[in-house]
Every structure is written in structure tokens, then in C-alpha cells.
Image (cartoon, rainbow, N blue to C red):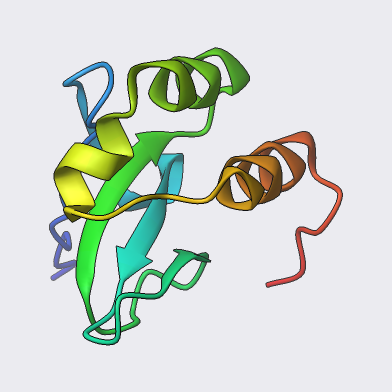
Length: 93
């Protein structure tokens, strides 16, 4: 008897689409206020999810949605890192 596992769904904060966690990138603010890209999806802290799409990342950067979701000032380097992850430059898992 094969058991089908439930795929965890998360919402992209830009498009408001529900997608599987694998299709999204998690950005985390930890209790020290540091913001970073969490490719494992398992780090502690307040998380926000973005679709793995360059236009979504650019829209998030322009509209400051991450600042609102994480209640902090998100550094531009985070967006640069997200763009690199999407374009596959540092996709080591």
C-alpha cells in the first residue's frame, strides 16, 4: 500500500500563489535581526517565500514587500543573492 505524502504548500508574498516549497525560495529574519536566503528552508526565524522567478524578485525589491513581511530593512545584497540563486550560479544543495 503506497502512501502518498502531502506536499507542503507555501504562499509567494508577491504573487499570492500557493506553490510547493521546492518552487519557492525562503528568506529569513532571525531573532538577531539578520536577514538571509535560506535555501534549505529549515532555518529558525520569521520566513517569507518568493517564487523562483526573476521578475517576482525584482517586483519584491521594487515594492519593499520583504521589508513589510519581515518587519526590517532588507539589504540590496539579499536581492542580488536571490537573483544568483535563480539564475543557478550558486545552486549547491
